Length: 436
Image (tube, rainbow, N blue to C red; front, side, top):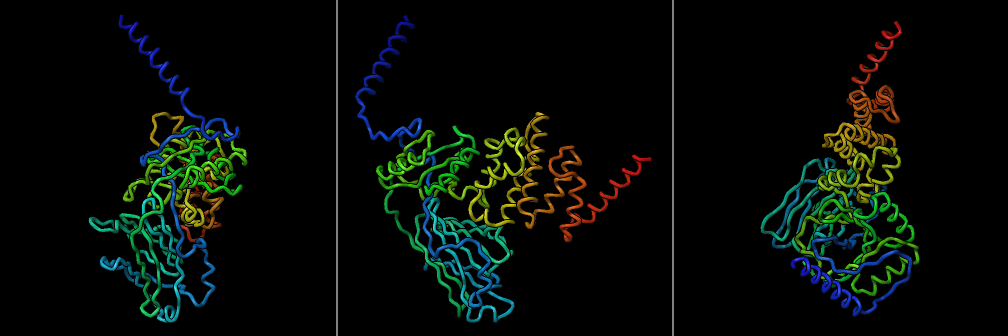
């Protein structure tokens, strides 16, 4: 009797679903350039598009400002003062040579981002070694962080706020101080639409990177995101105010010839402005080591990486880093070094997978030496490559002996020079013993 009831309920359910489907209106059919199109609503817990405005339009990290004698070239940060009532940050600047500041102007970039609300401030010609990593309670400013990977001729700060913001910057040459003034605002619209183009739950990461590259060449704006699970990598369109604008973007994808699965997302509301777990266009930044590790264990597993050569791995992974990191040789080399350490310490009980992880670590170190030879990590990469070969017998492009010779001949100031010479002597001694 129970079985009969279950079968009857199942038949009723199928009939109900069929009736509902039959009554659905036909909506906005858009060509056949893609195999499947979904339409559904996305909550703030899922993938979130980037919103960005440029204040003082950025030109990237370009040292050419050093050729302009009207600008500050070599100064230090004396201190940062937060004036709560005035909603102002004051960055005081100092210089060993007073003439360095006198009558000079300050070059800066000011970028506003609202997922989460923050200001990215770059001060050219102003540096500091001080670690700045402070977060506040019960203030409309949530915190301030200095980018630890900033180059020797500029400093970069990220200031987090509790709500959407406007911000302006100005430099007082008489007082040698930069002032950042902010106020709170509301976005032009609080709901809208976006297109999910691809994600790693369906497509391999290297395919998504290639799609991103081709769409960018074609002139279609797109954003590489990480979902709030910190594992799924997503390629998404810009955020549109109306559904029609999103459909126009899909039509451009049709013209481009994209034939993957697309999803039209309706964002019912913007995410809460104080959310800090959102990672967007700046996919990997100075504070995203957790996301980096999760990608290794989900998308860039040793089994997927070790068969590739270092150039192929570089092609796949470089797009994961923010433009600021990509354009800074020392910063991106630092990240590849972090990636290599994650593979070196890869947690697995399988010996075969562990050896694959060592091979992956070695190829990431090769990226540093061959792609970023002038970075601070280049000699470290050679040294660690030699150690992997020495300890685990895993060799790729370079031999252990070659690593030592390159350290000695190409990185004269390296802390590994003396030990490299000692190890080369051991090679010669072992060679003589083997001949005798």
